[in-house]
Image (cartoon, rainbow, N blue to C red):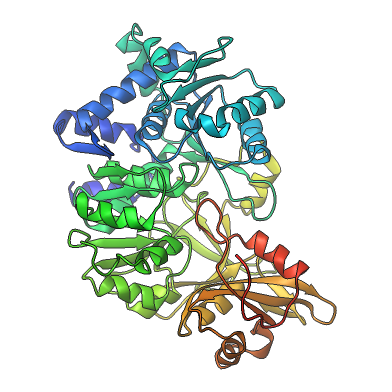
Length: 546
C-alpha cells in the first residue's frame, strides 16, 4: 500500500471503507493458497475461507435474512464463528456474538434486546444443556427465530422444524444465483452497523453498541500498521462477544493477510505450546492473560523465538511483567480503546520505557479528535485532566433500542464520552486515572481507583490490584483494595508503602489478599468485589478466599 493510500485511510472520509470480508475476498483472488485459518489439525486457505463464507451468506439470503437483521452465534473462539461473522456482515446483516458461559438471565437480556432472526449454536455444548437453555430463552422473549446447530456433535437431532443442522442449512443456499449475493454485498454501506456488541454492564444492564463497518475497517488498517508485522500469525482465544476478539484479533489480522490460529479457550500452557508449534508472531491479550502466561511454569523454557510483538489493552501491565517479555527479545505495545470508538484511541510509541507502558496508554491517534470534559460540563485545557471524549465519523452508530442512553453517551455537539478520566503528560501520553462511574468521594475528596491500583501494583510481590469503594458512616465512602501476589505479602506493609506515594485519603482503608475474580472476558469482576467489600468489612486481612 502506498503512502498516499495510507493517508486516505487516516482521513475522515468513510466512503471507501469496506466490510472486513472484502479483505478475505481480495486475498482469495491474489493469494488464494495462503493459510488463513488453523484450528486443531485443519487449515483453511484464503480461497477455502472465502468459499465457506460465500456458502454461508447464500444460505442466510435463502433464509430471508435482510439488511439490518440480527444474526447471532453462540460459540467458543473457532472458525465457524468467524465464517458466520464474515458472511452475515458481508450481506448487510448485523452479527452478534453470544458467550456459551452466559446464564439464562444474561441470555434473556441480550437475545431479547437484539431479537435475532436466526441463531447458530455450537453443538458440542449440547451436553451442558446449552441448546435447551437458548431455545427456552427464545420462547420466553417471544421470538420466532430458527436455531441452527454446528460443530462436532454427530448426535444432534432436529425436531419440530425449529432446529436444523448446519449442513442442512447450508444446502438451502446452493441454488441461490451468484447475482443475488453480489447485489446484497454491493448494497452494504460503510456507515451501516456491522456487529452488535453488548458492553460489560458494570453500571447496569449491558447496552448493545452498533459498531459500523467503517469502524472495524479503520481499526484493521491502523492497528495492523502499528504492529508493523507483515502477515501476522496470531492466536484467537478470547470470547467472541467482545470487540477484542472480533476486531483487534480477527479483523486486524485478516486485513493484514495474516493467519488466525483458533483455540476454544484461553489456557496458558496451550498458548505457550501453540506459539512454538505454529510460529506465532503476534500476541494480543489482556493483562491478566499475559500475567498468567509469564507466571506459568513452562514460560522460561517455552519456544518464543517466533514471537515478535506482544500487545495488550483493557488495563495496565506491571513493569515486572513488561520486562519478562522484553527479556525474551519481544517488542511490547499497549493500546487503549473501547467498543463505542471501535478503532483504538491511543497507541504506545516505539521504544516506550517500561514505566511509560505501565503508567500510560500511549499517544492519541492524531486522526481522532480528543478533548477533556470537566465535572462541571465545560471543556478543560488541551491536556486535561477530565473525561476523555473523542470524535470521528467511524464511532458507533448508536445503542440498540436505547435512544436516551445513546444521547447520554454523546455531548450535544457529537463528542463520545468514554467514561474514562485522564490527562496528557509532558510527552503527549494519555494517563488514565479512573472511570467516571468508579470514581468515589471519601471525606469530600475525589478518588480514582486506577491511580491507587497502579501504586499497589508497583510494589514488590504484587501481581495485580483492584480497588473499589464501600459505604462508610464517617467519610461517606472509603477505598477497599483486593491484591493478588506472592504468598509473603503483608497487608499492613502494603498500606505503609502506599502511604509513601499517596495522600492519606487515597490509601485504602482495607486490603484483602488473595486471587482476584474474573469476568468471562478475563477482566476483574469489580461488581463482585464491591459486594464482598460491602458485606464483609475487614481491616488488613492476611488472606481472602477466591
